Length: 205
Image 1: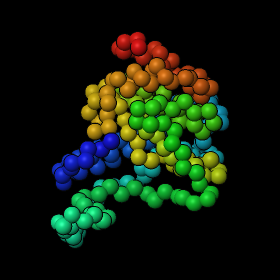
Image 2: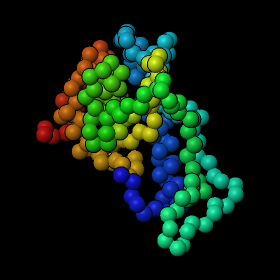
Image 3: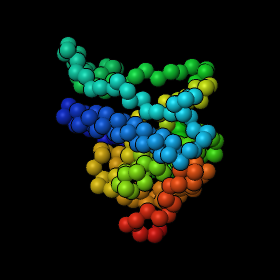
Image 4: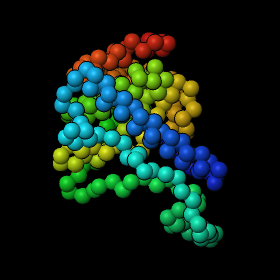
């Protein structure tokens, strides 16, 4: 989880890292669909019917023009909407009875979903690892699913071989955990992804 203590400087760094990861996750989503097209993989949420993508388009880091009100000094709760003047803005997600919020994986819990969309998300995670030459694993994947199977994913975290993506990054150990726990599904096989157990450079658990 995010460290409790923070400052204006660490807030800017965290937001910059979050925005960078959001666009990186979408980059891998685009390459996921290119791989699916190359291998003629069917039954994905696709650009021709409905779409699975990250909530990245139009996201930006902004700065307040007006100064923030001071926080309380008498020990009462700080109920300000913002405590720093720099913020991350992303497109508003649809909610309500026609939409379903789903957690596909955790920061330290690789997904092994059984429904169709969940299996596609698991295959996407596997694809990211392969496409990044086993250097990046997108984790903590969650999203909003509409009735037409449109999927909007948001707020990703990641583990990297260099362990430098931000406070959530637990490095190669989590990449190895994915290798051990991930069960390849029909989409992994259709995409011709290398078996997770074949990840190079990691000791067998």
